[in-house]
Image (cartoon, rainbow, N blue to C red; front, side):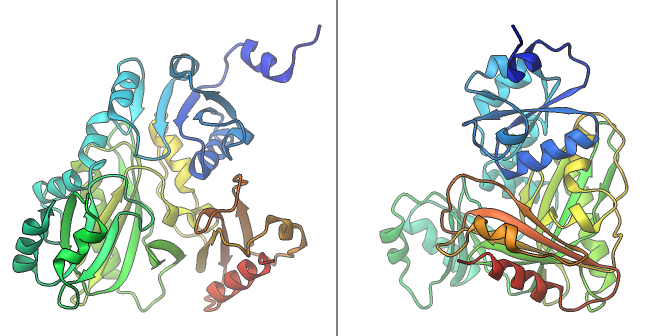
Length: 382
């Protein structure tokens, strides 16, 4: 009797090296696609068979021991994973970034403390857990503060921009009674920069060219290749800080580092993601190597590639869930040269959920790439 395809895969002699990915969302999907291009077999530890990474790769649901028996090396899709589980994995397999690295970053207050310890530029901050400590933070840093929860904060969740000259401090705890985290001094920044930095098993480190990142409601809206108005000295400063950061945390793989550039052109680290990052999606079409391929190279022991721009202008625009967005419109969109839609095939259309992204690149110094991407995104509306 002929074997079903899944059974054939389970019984096939292992030939390719296997990378286990903890998680099965869009980042895992794009990591899996990079694996195939490098001759690596991806195996994802998933919640469901219809998760976007499960749809294109071998996957295991629930049985961590079986998952670990299948793979050579383990990596993460996101950093919000139980440390006890990570420690169990590390006792039998190499995992990158390491548990030691993730412990320094996973909790955002610990992350801030470590940035300070490593003498890396970050905003002033004070631990806050009640009204008294909030008053102390206001006294030390002024009324304009950004309050952040220590854990599980991403895409604007767990972040609160407050001006306590216009609102009483006790009103914050009326709305967020269980808040436990820290307050940062509000940075009056000119623009936000993001940089993807990679470090391999041999300690070799390199950065992707920095990009300009623009947020909307705490979520990345779009990313642009910097134009000539951005000083080269600032971009170089961003790269130097990112390389020092990943070395300080003994990171392996790709990290996303978000920074503010203040009115004096000084860079200030906002947050660190010890993984591939939304702002790095532009590299899939604008650079000689994508952040996903670079990450696979780094964690599998391959040589990492020095990234560089291969186009003169580039833009990335996120497609977020709303009552208007419909994937049924995809087939009706005609794309021009240099335009590409990446659809994640997620189940369901939740508000502000990342459903895909649009990359547009050009070999000329075009100024209207963002507008072109926005027109494409509009075409997905019902």
